[in-house]
Amino acid sequence: MSRSEQVCVLGAGSWGTALALVLARSCLRQVRLVASNDIQAAAINEAGENLRYLPGIVLPKNITVTADVQMALNDIDVCVYALPCVAADDFLPLLADGSYPVVAACKGLHPQSLLRTDEMLAKYIDRSRIALLSGPSFAREVAAGQPTAITMAAEDISMAEKAAAHFDDTNFRIYLSDDVVGVAMGGALKNVIAIAAGMADGLGLGHNSVAAVVTRGLSEIARLAQACGGKSETLMGLSGLGDLVLTCTGTLSRNRQFGIAVAQGKSLAEAIDEIGQVVEGVRTARAVFQMATQMQIELPLMQSVHLVLVGELSIAEALVQLMSRPEKAE
Image (cartoon, rainbow, N blue to C red; front, side):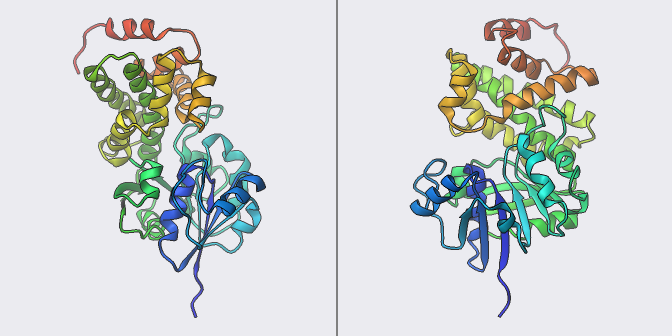
């Protein structure tokens, strides 16, 4: 009898749990979902679902929830990293010595080092083992089995194909890319633009304003991504435009919800507490501001988001500054 495939998913938040469900839909695959502590693991196991992040979605028997990282990594065929970017240096060293693929399912820039997702992984893991999963994908819809199209990127397209083969749920359609820079930057930067779109919504500025945010935001994303070595065509695809539109307009978007809350007068802490999950765009906005300064790239929308979040500009002042910029060719 052949051995069943063993998979580890690091991170039992909404996205990690959703990906564990996708992976577990092949009954021949055993999935180990790593929770942050024994209390969280016990609560999920007892309830048979992740009540905090994905209530109402039952976990199948071939998902085992544990807080024991070393046990979860033992003799696996693939590891999915679904923790926030800021936790990378705590967990990625544990993956350094294996031969299995590591799929990064996080989106962001490290707030201190300014590293992209692929660069965070490459500090500890050979690039021949690294793949990035990114695109328009709300966790609840993925967990519920609703049709989703997403991108798997690796420097070698055969590695992207190998990593994608583990996600064989027919409702989870994967397209392949060898542009890890473009995919990493698209996934990270769209969160900052989604905060801006949420602020526009929170102020009641109307659909025109949100459309302007999305369009000019895409231009800024492409500008910075290309400066880092990404391809413009990648930003027109699922991991760029697709993810941007979803995150800026979808009601399930945490970054958009955060922007709405801030525009309605909530403090950063209050807005994050209200959402109850990591808002990656806050850290990424800080990183983008530093990158724009260092690289001397003009990113007025994303830079304004950061200045609003750190209290150096009000949203009203940022709006006036953006709208009063000199006319220029699009």
